[in-house]
View 1: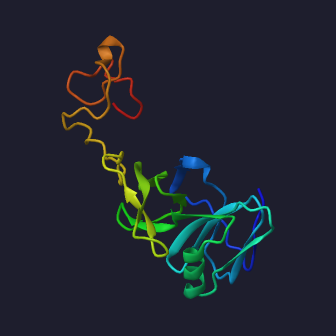
View 2: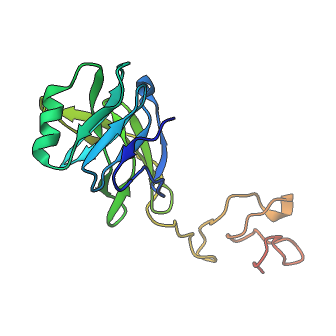
View 3: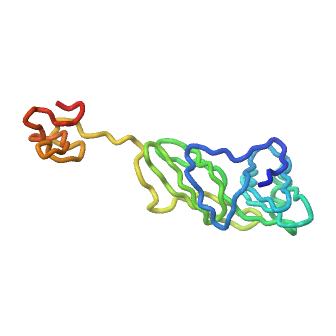
Length: 201
């Protein structure tokens, strides 16, 4: 993979909330979102440019040479998005976002084009899948990660077991008299008074 020539490189960093991204249509590559004035894309290369509130997946499909993308100002970046030079590919993308889950703003450090999905992990064991969806028209279309209905699994907080001796079973098992480990209710003790469960009388 060719790395683009950029001023003040700001490439994709893997963060704790990113688990994986599905690669719809093979979109992949580098990610630029910092203080660059322009991005140079070599022939056959592609990547994500997320500047001034607009993310685009840009590819250099020409055989003519390097493609220069001006991104110093919002006006320059908008002009490129509206012009889309011959030999270049341009697709709206979803860039890094913050999602409010499990008690705060969590970074969803993922990039993708329309239709791609990413699964983020939050809190103790909660996972949520997001899909890149696009609204608006070029050159001002925007992409955002949208929660996929029914994709939430797990918990934000560590589950607390029932209190021992409350009569509620706090771990699954059989009566200790039958060789299992019941640990919790009346009648779970063996004749020796030992339940067979560590830390339980």
